Image (cartoon, rainbow, N blue to C red):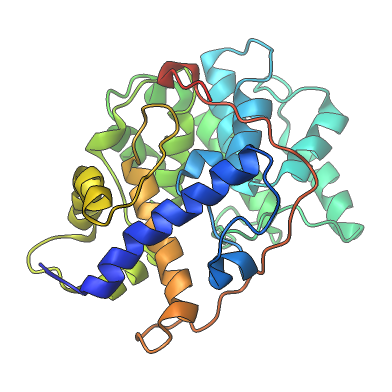
Length: 313
């Protein structure tokens, strides 16, 4: 493979600087948390996916909220939340149904609540990534097709039993991706979130999928991949991170003893693509601008990690 050295080094710089911002915010330091004008102005995801706001909400409110749920209900709750990927939508459903379980799930009742929200100009989807929206189940409304998908998955097909029997993340990914409205990127996000829970314990370092943004970042970072796939490139970054941080004299401060995982290395390529739109605008890309400017949130995040990771901040 042939690297574009300047952008390759920028990948590690970005990962380190974004992580430094995380630590400074966590420690209560005042902004700006970086001298980097691009990172000051625009919104970028954390170097660790798990530290992003929606992932933390998933952990604290959907998976580990102090109540004991069956393995089947846990899977249902995770996939339902991630199809909309929006905290306020989860809160809306909770307010109307008291709890979210397979037993309480009713397609028509859930649809009524969501339709009422839409009629009041309330957004029910997170626009961080665009979920598939065709009418495969025959409904005009996007949310009705997603509710029908849940019904097919959990009520008709009993996908929960199949997922619980999976020995690897890739095996679960192949089951999920075969459903309509779920592409490869979404399926990878879902198996990653499922693996945050205690109901499975798949090895993270064995499997990854390059999303569209990640592929754009890889193209900027490498002039020629030769015979390597995008997933091979992500695994290369995962395997060489410690030596590259050392080479560039970057003191990367991990969360606990957890180094960047494949999902994180994949995400950083996506964020690198965004960063380069401002830092290296001459690089060819079908995206020219960074859409979102950084706006500080008033709500403080109480960071929580899957107990099986043994992380103590």
